Picture 1 (cartoon, rainbow, N blue to C red):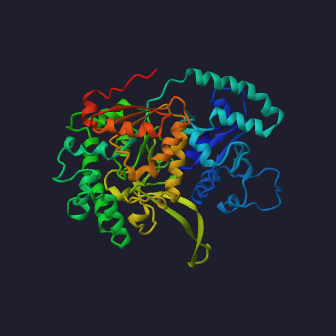
Picture 2 (cartoon, rainbow, N blue to C red):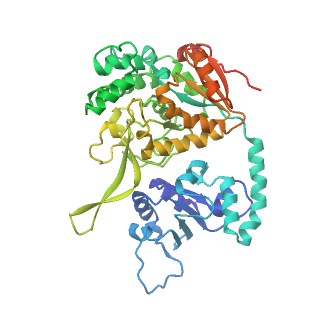
Picture 3 (spheres, rainbow, N blue to C red):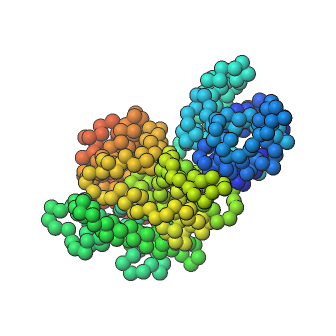
Length: 483
């Protein structure tokens, strides 16, 4: 069969899918040739609708299904099964919502490999998972291909180069950003913790008082205004500062632009709510909301376009102002205007309107009003319950996976405050699983931070760089050489 037509149709329709089986092996360099197209699909309801629309022109029908019986090709049919072998006008297509030996769709997508093929950018199963799936299938034809795939995997590992470090971004990363922008309004900035008292509560911190306790008291009394003020401040900063720094017309290179250009293969973790990192990475075609948050996010596009893949992730460990969670959907019969709400698995939606003007290619999905306190974890001393939220847990799982394979984490402007220990401890535990783990702390108080944390996490090698982000940029982002 020809693979161009179905893969182009699926990609152009925005279908969330991953190529597996023989074609995945061929894309990785295997000499094996196949005439079948095996596709691993997300069972998200909207994704099933897109699959139906994309493949409809090829008249799909279950292979060996009696011709005298009607076959309905719609999303309801796909919801009622997990494996479909379809005979189409262009050949056999296997749709699989589950596959032995490789895990869930989200787990598979997390390690999938992006290829430029068939005039599109597509995702295919990574070699390690492909080998595991072949072994789990246990058929002679699958087992016979394992040896060749193992050789390809070894060659891939031998050819791989060390990646740029993973970064952990704190409030100190972007607190100086307003000074490098052009035409930024007065008092428009990303605030540090000590400034939050004035920004959100109209007063200064008192002696021995923590802003986290101020937020906790306000929320306990049902006062959302301080949290709303904080979010308004950040969204205003994103609107003016991000647009100014990311733009090139008339603006000289700034430290943030140089930073994101310098570390082109890095992944980013952050406890910040803002979108400064995403704005820069999106401008350089390295980040897209569909998968750039580390989980699948539904992003409504303003015009038809292919589904690009993010090469850099931005994992918001305390939530993002631009991502909403939904755990229900409205269903109705085609011939009725009456609908009913049914529970679903957690699904995440991108809201570009939270920061107007940064995402012109995307529009807001019709989700109703989602309160700010449901989007982010407030800066309070006890975050235990909030850290159980679906989006946050999914992001932490992805961050732990990245850090368990990471040799160097660079923290910029993050204080490792005692109030946040429950937030950063899972990250340190994941990093500790790697015997070569190293952390570089870039912050004015880096020396005291390293002394405190090296005793708590002795399996990690710690190095301080006592500089602000701006000063580190002047030093050309120099990092220590480890042996």
